[in-house]
Image 1 (cartoon, rainbow, N blue to C red):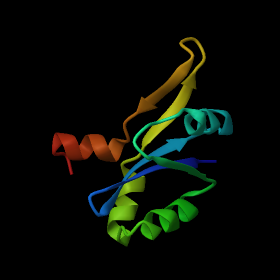
Image 2 (cartoon, rainbow, N blue to C red; image 1 turned 30 degrees about the horizontal axis):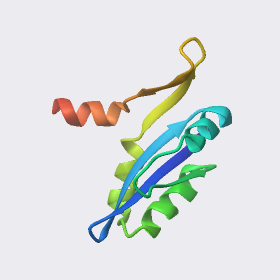
Image 3 (cartoon, rainbow, N blue to C red; image 1 turned 90 degrees about the vertical axis):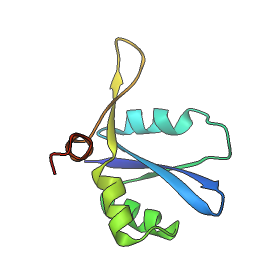
Image 4 (cartoon, rainbow, N blue to C red; image 1 turned 90 degrees about the horizontal axis):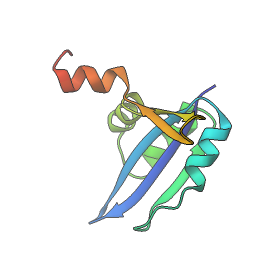
Length: 100
């Protein structure tokens, strides 16, 4: 099961979104509970389909929304260090390295 977190901030007439994926509810809830400043809205979705609909609700087209999900970092809780570790998606790495 994948839980999708969306961080939205309205900036100069457009919603800027950052998308994260989590493999467990505890980590997703921790991410949601961490306070951020600057008027951010954070939400969780139980699946990618509902996340896709939410992203498009912010005015992003289908291609942009799909890409946001594809490039989302995956967060897992690091029990030893007591915080969330994030791993880049392979799609993001491929694009950065020019391997597409």
